[in-house]
Structure formats: C-alpha cells, structure tokens
Amino acid sequence: MIIGHEITHGFDNTGRQFDKDGNRIPWWTNETIEKFNEHNQCFIEQYSNFSIPEIDMNSNGNQTQDEDIADNGGLKAAFYAYQNWAKNNVNIDKKLPGLTKYSNEQMFFIHFGYTWCTRLSVSRIFNRLITDVHSLAHIRVIGSTSNFHEFDRVFSCKPGQRNSRVKKCVVW
Image 1 (cartoon, rainbow, N blue to C red):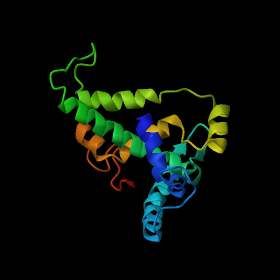
Image 2: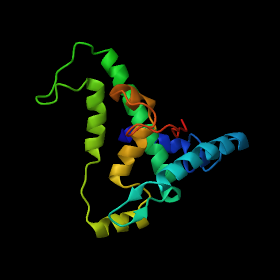
Image 3: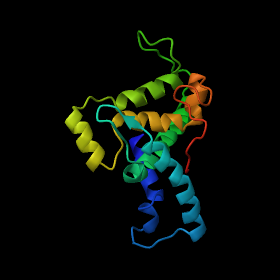
Image 4: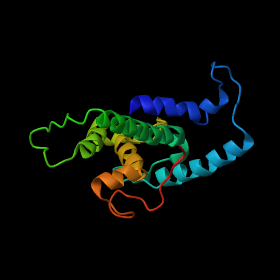
C-alpha cells in the first residue's frame, strides 16, 4: 500500500509539476488539471466531513487532499497487485487460526486497517489535525475503503450501508 501511495504522488498537485527526469516542468494539459481539480474537490468535501468527536472538530480535507488521494490510489494499487499475485499462486490458501471465516481478500482489507491501528491522546489528535498533511489514521482507513468498489464487493456492502459511500471519490 505504501509503495502505491508514493507512486500516486507522482500524479498529484505536486507530482504534476515535475517531468520524468525530476525537472520542474509542468506536464499536464489545462484540461487534465481541470478534471483533476473536479475529482479532487470530491476528496476535499468527503474528508472535511469526517468528525473527530474527541476534539469536537472535523478533519481538514484541504490540508490533507494530496495524501488522501495517495492513500486511495495506494490501496487500489496494492489490492490489484495482490489479486494479480493471488491469480498466479492459487494453491496458497492458508488461514490464520481464529480468522478462518474471512476470505483472503477480506484479510487483505483487515490487514490494511490494522496497519493504521493507533491510539492517540486528545492533545496529539488536536496537534495532528492542525499540523499534519495526513489524515488521522482511522480516517485514512475509512476514507480509502469507502471509496473503493472492491471493498464493497469483498464485504458484500451496498452503497450507503456502513462504510460504503453512494458517491465514491475517485481520481485514478
């Protein structure tokens, strides 16, 4: 997921300003920029509506937009890479004790959530919300999975139910 996240940065508001050799040369057309900004606005609105009850504030989608898009793109890239790997390794289907009721694809998403498992003090939550360009860990999980149709398929979610958004934010 993290590798996909970092690759996605090559195609965000910062990455679009550098060519393949790392020279600061914008390479997107005006039409591409307009389309990107339209899709980006969906992320800004979505992530700005995540409530953080510990401090009675909402997340700031403007502040976190590039990282949120990279999280979403990274999750997709990692999942599709996993599916490709699984297709070529069909005989590997070992289950962990106590988790046998979950499919391998479900375990992929469970592990994704576990990767961001953290506990922060109220002061640390406030500090991160004000200063960090990344969303809080639980928002990174909820935001990315709620925009990904494969998550819905794997867990049999219907749009608007639990963690499945009716309007999914997608850039790439």
